[in-house]
Length: 65
Image 1 (cartoon, one colour):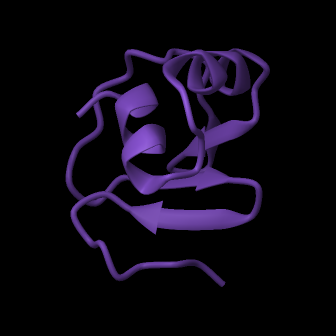
Image 2 (image 1 turned 135 degrees about the vertical axis):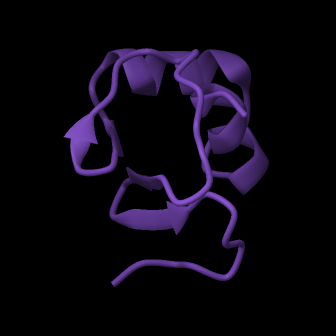
């Protein structure tokens, strides 16, 4: 799944445009690094963080600290 699709799937953003904007503004981290590519392919185990919310790809129950 692509990063922008993941943000929408999690309900962290409401539209693809919002996902694109937030990613390009450097508000999203993947595995501890800022990610600015909305088409970044995520793999199981990747950790995605936005607004202090964390989710592990492939683990729908993960919520963050």
